[in-house]
Image (cartoon, rainbow, N blue to C red; front, side):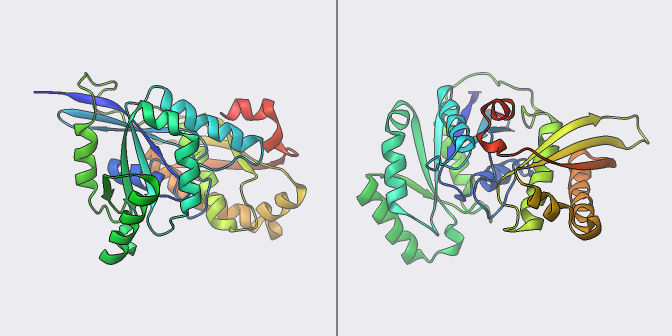
Length: 295
């Protein structure tokens, strides 16, 4: 039996559906999903193992033009994901094609794309008619010179079996990198912080944009029958944001804690005690020392 294994970097513009796609392949919510951009900040590895294959997906931040220091670090995360990758899975949002942005990505990552095998997937095709899909594929071929395009929907899992087959065909032969039961290389502590941050994005809508960082200070795993203890800091840039997070008489942070705890318990498979603190660190997104610790 021929065994194949390798790293697959998922790249694309913000909101292309990269995290949704990886979660769909793994059949597990590993990467944060939100309709807002910049939900994913760090590279997140999800490992899909079959009888004769192991695909190590690397979910990367959305490709954008950096406007401040944190986005510079995010761009570096994308670049470093290419270093040891075997295959680039380039995901394009079929419901929102911005040709000038796609042309810029082709230009900026021309050398990286040339060095690696690349699969192009047109996502969110469940929202398009057959005629619209045909027109968009024709436009991509004409404007970007892209020939082979697989139409998919990460949300409904449309054609993911076809995409998976093509990925496996393009992976190198080789032994598995991880054991069969491993789902990710990230610790539980990382995903707890991601769950809390995702709930903040959902709960506070536009009031708290992306100037929020969650730092899990303690994660104590306790004996069976006892709740795990989690202590996390919510770090913001402004005092006004702190008041929004807390809410009137602390009602909003209480609701945040309840929503986050429910998802964390589902993730770790047991009850947890979650304690949240809100702190202000002025302009942390421009603080190189602070950002180095995050990335």
